[in-house]
Length: 143
Image (cartoon, rainbow, N blue to C red; front, side, top):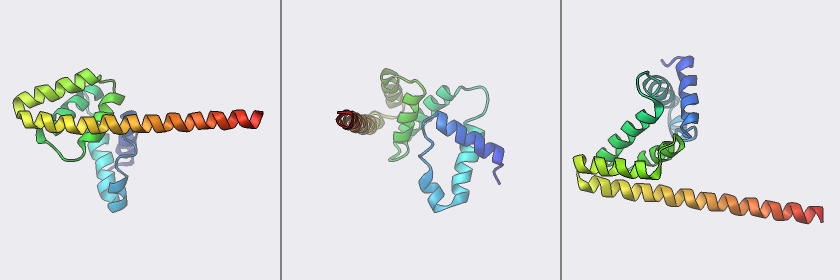
């Protein structure tokens, strides 16, 4: 079974990547599945020495793009941005992978990435709108 130390290390790493809320459906389905994902995958594999977290994210993103995975890649685009990869670097990863794994994989990755960009933009706009409403309410209360 996964040690509590590895589980906590995995949780810390997920938070650093901005992914602390991405595995709840596994936890709802089966606690062992969740603990293995957090403790083994992130607490052991992602925490190994010799590659930085950023480098591991690049490798994982490239592998997911190459496999044209229908799900899972979206959260890795967000993690990549959280870890400092630029839009240009993410696009370059897609191009590089497309050259080796087939151009359709790049097109698929582009569609997924555009979904992420659109979702993130909509979320940011909704937060800004909510913040603006909050400021207006605060001003009215002070008046």
